[in-house]
Image 1: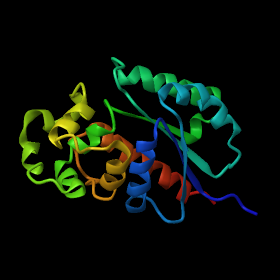
Image 2: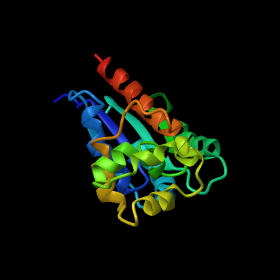
Image 3: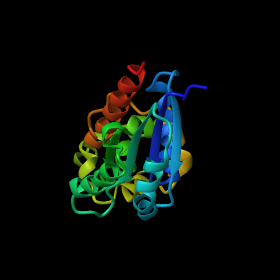
Image 4: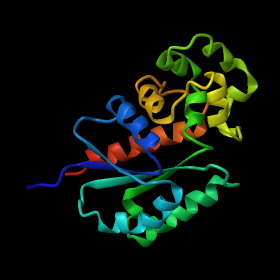
Length: 195
């Protein structure tokens, strides 16, 4: 039996899975099967990544590793460390690493119209004109900002799932979100080109 064409996501946490499960139907071909390997935080991801990549036996799979930058001073250092594990596992040619600068909540703060719609809260979209929400990748604590903005209503997994259905895929306010979308599209192209 032939191997399925798979896009495998190796994720730091459950909220990333919730976001992608809702986002991917709008983003990739139904000919590609998404698979999710969710870890229990960034340390667990980094500890197990080599073995998970090395042990995956489907030659028709591509891999995308998604991790938050969190408090790391430089996302390039985090990305390089994860990329090194892809190289070590022999999967560099079929893998991409993407870092959410600082956290997934940055993606949401870049699209307050989607937050307003998904969470049923009024007046959030008007906040987009504020300087800190025009380029939220630079915020120190985006999850704190989102909770404050939504009057503590934001819940990571539930609202990530809701937001995945309505985030603007062409939104340019978060460079890290655009890098994620472009990375997914690139891997989709590679998978669809397989014989």
